[in-house]
Every structure is written in structure tokens, then in C-alpha cells.
Image 1 (cartoon, rainbow, N blue to C red):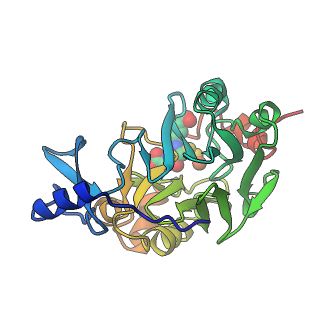
Image 2 (cartoon, rainbow, N blue to C red; image 1 turned 90 degrees about the vertical axis):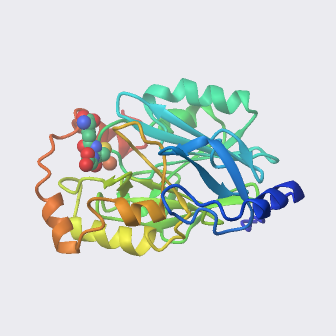
Length: 294
Ligand SMILES: N[C@@H](CCC(=O)N[C@@H](CSS)C(=O)NCC(=O)O)C(=O)O
Ligand SMILES: [Fe+2]
């Protein structure tokens, strides 16, 4: 069900072999697998980026039957992700936010999707999830969160669990450290990973509340995320600077916190001195019950 076979069209194969000597702007090996495709719409620096035959560059394109949308909630700078099988229309939503429930469900309806699972990467502290209210509006929808989060949901996830949608799936990797119950969701073919707050672009989730532990987070990222292929694209739960995606290779090379030793990392994390998220007092209790309160 979960093995996704990349189909390389002959014209793409010809284009790739003609231009095989071209290199990626930041030296990363995006072109390691299969054929390559020129993506003028996805620029790093002044150079075009080469990617595999999957069109990740056009983030709203369907690729090998995978429909993918990255959505943004501006108050909490949260990314919500919608993934669906383009053929069966079965869909999964990751980290949906209460304030954008109407927008998200309109998308689902307009695209003719059958939303089966709404999953949270952890018990969020900065916004209220829409998974509870969404269940009331979408018949059959199941909420999911890690067992270790302590939150209620229809599905409690643990390491290695699969969330299938059509011939695709997301596989759970437990990545505690920001919270005990943080998970990273990796596509079956390991080309995309949804890291929640465990790994942010050029950063990571704070470790000063909700069972946070810097050394645990460091171990999680190094063992569960940095062991994915370099070209695996990373999609975090937040970005505060307008960045949308990264890759394992990029973060292994440029993440200013996680390229340090574990001791240096812990020192950085224990001295961030960030103010608590504004909505923390209401968000955490609400999210422990799927966004539904009495
Ligand atoms: N100002 C925001 C909260 C910002 C914040 O604390 N973000 C968290 C992720 S949400 S739990 C975080 O881990 N940040 C890491 C960092 O380095 O910024 C608000 O008031 O909501
Ligand atoms: Fe968080």
C-alpha cells in the first residue's frame, strides 16, 4: 500500500541526461535519485534548483499521485499540511488550527477529498487545534496524536505506526524533547517529513516547558531526522521568518543549533529566555482534549 514507485517519463529522462552536469546552488544532493527536473519557480540564491522527478518545487502540484498543500495560519505562524491520494481522494491533515478551520474544510470540499485523519504533531502550546471541531463537521474523521502526549484522540500513535491514505502513508517517528509526545511524520518513500516543533528551519522547538529537555531533543533530531536521506524535504509546524521548507542535508549543514555538540546545544537551549506563548494557558488544556472544551 505504501510503496510509492516513481515513474520517470522519457522526456524527463532525456532532459536529465542532457543536463546532468549542472549542479545545485547550495551543493546539496537533491538530484540523487532518479531523473532530475529544472524548477525555475524554486530558487535558492540566484541559481535554479534541481530536484528529482517529483515536482516538489511546485508545492501545489500533484506528484506521483500525491496531492500536497502547505497552508499558513498567520497569528501563530503555524503551517498546516494537507496530503491526499489524487486517485482515491483519501486525505490526511496535519496540525490544523482552530482559526482556519473554514478555510481548510473549504479546500477539502473543493478538491473533493475524503478527510480520514486529522493528526497533531504534538500538544501545541501556542494555538488551539481544530481537530475536535473538525471531527464534528466531517463524518468519520478520526483525530490522532502520540500516545505520549497525554492528550485524548481517536488514535494514539507510537513509533513505526502508519497513517495510510490511499496508496500513500505517513510513518511515525517519535521525536521527544520539545514535548514528550512530539512526533515526526515521514512519507512512506522518505521524500518528505513533517517535523512539528522538533526541528524548525535553521532552528528547533524550545525546551523550557511542557516536559522539554534539550539533550532529549538533540538525540531525537540526530537519530530520527538527520538519519533520513539528505534530499528528504522538511516541513516544520512553524516558521517566523517566512521560510516554508528545508531539507535534511540543509539542516545537517546549516542549522545553527543542531550542528553544535550536545553540550553546546543544551547551553544554547537553556539560555533562550523566550517569553511564553501568549495563548499557552488556554491552548494546552484545550489541546489535551482535541481542541474541545466543556
Ligand atoms: N511568540 C509566539 C510563540 C513563539 C514560540 O515560543 N514558539 C515555539 C513553538 S510554538 S510551542 C518555539 O519552540 N520556538 C522556538 C524558537 O526558537 O523560537 C506566541 O506568542 O505564540
Ligand atoms: Fe510546540
